[in-house]
Length: 319
Image 1 (cartoon, one colour):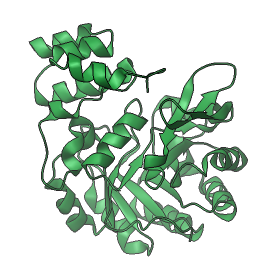
Image 2: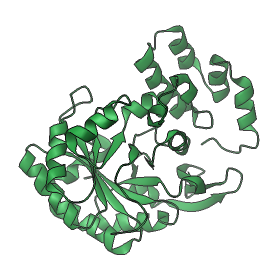
Image 3: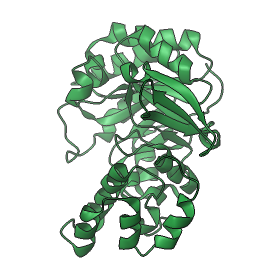
């Protein structure tokens, strides 16, 4: 097993598109998340990138060649707990990307659970669940050639037997852990997560299993661990709505969790989800946020212009 991470008794920020950027990962880690997954990034996109040291921000940027687009950004402060989640359907592309990143990340995770068209159409995400031989090839290739931990995140299959058989096959590749989202491919977020399905996987494996699904409030963390027997817990929407869900002392008011050094589109997406959870987008606050065109405008909504000004000094690019 690759050294570096003990996957037992961990609180983990789940990979979330448009959310899992460096600022949000750092925010979650500051509140107590032990591991923070970045948003899924497709291997083809990363293959177009060069590694650039950003001396102004103190970050490591993977920038698309021929553009100024930062595809993935990390920093030394998160080196020991950031997990890069990759969308891939090819073992050699996956390895090439992982080797580009391996000095700057704690682990690499292969997305095998996303059912969205952009992922599935390329044979990635949940499309891999029906290709066990390819799953084995991808994970085995990474494990044999990397010194950092390799993991994957799956969904439940149609039957318990199918899910357990795939999980056992994955375990044989030598991965350090497996995350299980307690929903099947057709299930939507509104459908209740099937914690018993995660428990079936836990009972069949010896490696750590990370439970994911319907962890919305701090009490849900011990509840899902007790119900599934999982080694660790991964939080998605619960963290999106309030990143301080990881805080041992208890959650803070959600408005204290707003990101300021971030792309305005991603920040508005995150704040809108917080507002939906706590009030309404039709509220005065929701309407005001909708009109914001910059981080300064957003800061003005919350009366934090001075704070925004202070953190903006010396910035050459938004995170």
